[in-house]
Length: 145
Image (cartoon, rainbow, N blue to C red; front, side, top):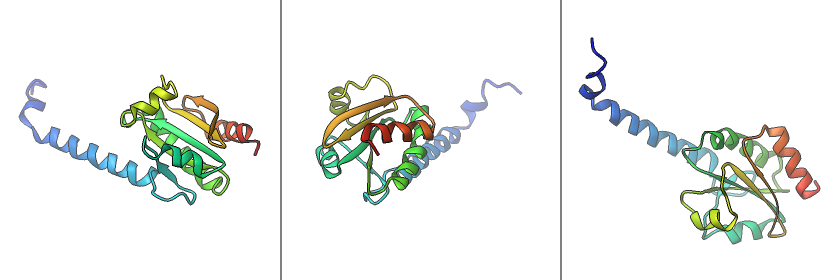
C-alpha cells in the first residue's frame, strides 16, 4: 500500500484533527483561564490590563500564545504558584496573539515572558520556560516575599 493516497482518501482525518485542536483549546482555557482571582489564573487582555495590575499589590502576568510549546510547559507551574501564593500575588495570562498592543508596550520578543508588577509598575521580567523552583524564587525576590 502506498503512503501517497493515505491521507488524501480520508478527509475525516483533517476534521478529527480540527475537533481535537478545538477541544484542546477549550480545555486549556477552562484549566488556566479561571474567571476569579481566588488562587486562580485570570485572563488579561488590553481592556482589563490596568485593572489587573492595579487590583493587587503584586501581580505576575504570563505573556503566552496557544501555539507556543514552552508556554504550555509553564502554564501548569503558573497555576500551581497562583494557588500557593493566593492572597499575596495575583496571576494572569495574556495571549500575545490576541493582545498585540500589550506585547508591543512591553517589547515582548520571546515567549513565555513573565512580567512582575509591584504597585502597578513593572518590577522585573523573566523570559523562557523555567522550572517551578526558579520561577518561585524569582517571584519572591522581585516582591521581597
